[in-house]
Image 1 (cartoon, helix red, strand yellow):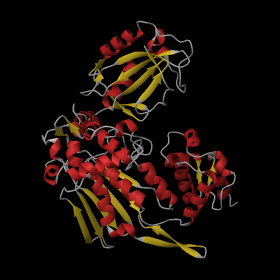
Image 2 (image 1 turned 90 degrees about the horizontal axis):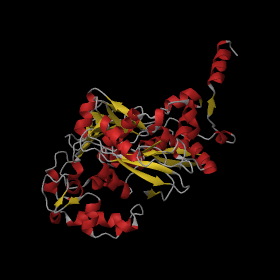
Image 3 (image 1 turned 90 degrees about the vertical axis):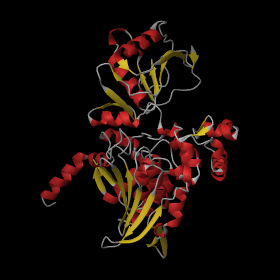
Image 4 (image 1 turned 180 degrees about the vertical axis):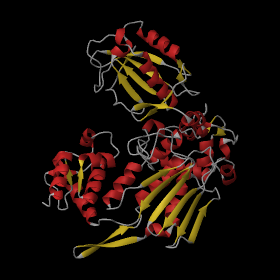
Length: 478
């Protein structure tokens, strides 16, 4: 029996919780429990807490787990699933109540129900996988992730010493890395981040620490092409990073520094003065590059293209979005295709591990009075388009004053940026633009109190009844 040391985390990509009624008595729903476990196994693994009600952090005080229930859970799941490992433990919470912590490791092969149904964990939901997506799930989830394979058999001592030292020094200098991890030896640190395994570098290690000829041997070592077009669609400049001399982290810095167009600025009037606004914000460009490098499938060939037109920048990445992510839910869904590379980028402070970075791109663009990014997915590529033109320069000052007054969250900056561009929206329209499931969810995106004393250029959220009444008055000529 285990004892809980802290409050239970909120439900999400790696955690779910169910009432004890879901696994006891006549209310037991074993098929639902099996579905959630399969979804976790087909994603990154996770935990199912049995005995904690939705919205609660601890079980009822005095709750006791029957002695035979863990074995029953293990047996019932084994009867209903294929390729699933379920590890139940009885845990005692600080309030004395007990619950079952059911740990689900990432499946070595695709997990399913015994009657052939597949599920995948996407954010806080277990989604069914059907049709061609079943084949995608099988191909994307090999028994051994691409990152940890040592197929090239390159000894760890043959790594580029300069790249290795710079990476290890950056990790030890990062506040995101635990003190206990920083104390590890160089070889232990390489093992910890899956850069080496035994005496050999992993594919991830070759990608980040390898020499030029070693990196070139990888199936899909990233190549980036920057192409600039004029008003007539003719190519006027081209830069290519295809010599495999740089790691993904170094590529981001090289692209930003070597493309002069990224440092162009607008001059906007600001009272008696003028303020400079970048044509393409550095945060946006770096986030686009991070997403392209971290979330691409490294088992599929294809270059990353940065297509710069007079009015827009298009970033084209080979391969579709990770299974479970769509252009419609990209703001609310987190699926990491390359788990260990994402972890390394996070600890190096190059990205936020919790999300794909699209929320940050939305925040910066909308705060600068620009349109939201446009995302298009086809069967073999993903294209993100960011516009150069500032639709409403006054939005920049508005968001800055609102943020200074209310210390806005990221979600609030995104929402206010949308409202300021549209001036007035119904709650339904705002929820649809933010790709929310219902109007009720808007409460977490903008606090109603912020409407009381907004700066000039204040946005308005009309109730749907008010908008309908306004339309009636307009038709009547009022």
